[in-house]
Length: 187
Image 1 (cartoon, rainbow, N blue to C red):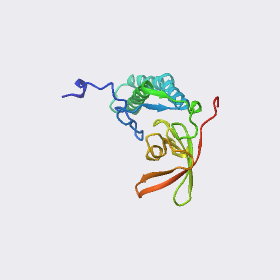
Image 2 (cartoon, rainbow, N blue to C red):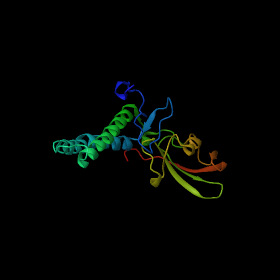
Image 3 (cartoon, rainbow, N blue to C red):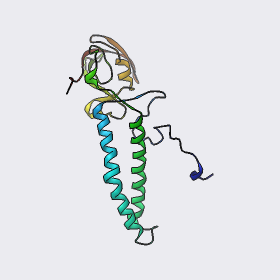
Image 4 (cartoon, one colour):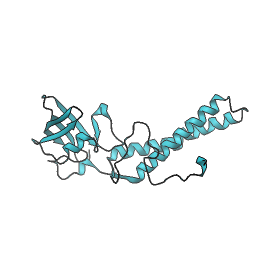
């Protein structure tokens, strides 16, 4: 049967999951910080208003040049258009199910919850600091980890001074929560 006759699911935001993006666990909410939500909205707006119209213009121009089978502008443009459309679908679905959580509004600041910046010590004495963010905001270079990552799940609800068991590929490890910070209200 041709792919043209199969029904696409509108329910699953992971259908158009880009390479490297984390899928949401089944039944989990798509928690996101206000800054992350704004970044996704900005990206979607840029794709719809700037990038896609430019590519459509190039493809239209290239299509008018005759033989499309050897027309690099047309072939590349159509491929880029599919990539843009796929990203637009992904962003639209993720934004629709996003639940914005402002870490600055957290009332219980002595425990680790979504949006917390946590400093912890490993068994070897090394200290690490991470910020727990949504799956669409992960940035390892900025020490931002997903709330569904093993380290974040191990730390959730812990308090300063708590010893937490973390399962690693090398085996179980105990880490100690040293500090918990949240952004200040209005920051």
